[in-house]
Image 1: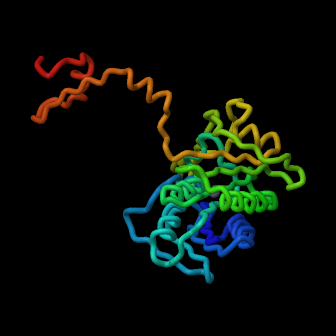
Image 2: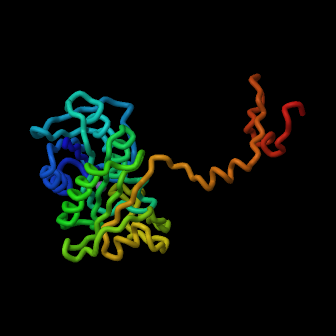
Image 3: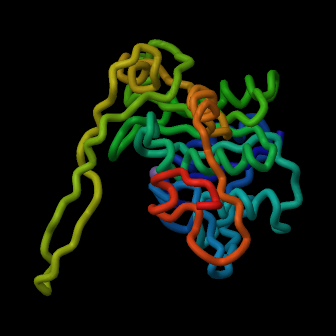
Length: 273
Ligand code: MN
């Protein structure tokens, strides 16, 4: 198996090495990771400047870009002439659950791999500073084997969250849905040495909506959470609802009021008034 590994904590992160070590038991491992931390980078792609790649080991590379850049370069660039069988992202220090997956560079690296047609999973440990990666390493190997055997459903990646527990304390693996976080981000305001205000986002421990089969519930109860995430963000219930709405379209090519101007939108008037 040719395995590609990336992360959003950067090339020096302990979790990256732990994942590479663990999966090297299954095949050849290639690492392409950002040269610094990009937590919260989401699915951003660098388009306004060139990217530099530095080879730091026989199969290890850093990129001065985002996790998504790393996957795009590793898969579509010319530096590694391999067809990857699996892409794994992590092991992230900090959980990536519920609505927070949209901020996550770790999940986005797996997302990018899925867009490029490769089976992928993202793996995170629900610890803030120091983490014991033993359980995460074990589940990464297990998942890689299962994905090799079964493949993954189309357009789907796996988002894995491991409780901050010893492997022997973990109660099992739960297949979960993405939970709902309760909005509670703290914006800290402070003053810099020159007397100017600055702001810093974050800091509060997340809380979430109670839901028995969510990622949050599983990890809190001591289970490893495995959530299948779909690339298609369409809400099927809302799709049906919106199709019952009326969307009058004032089709005109000449200059004048836009059909979306407040005056026109208010009355839904026809083009002849
Ligand atoms: Mn991170």
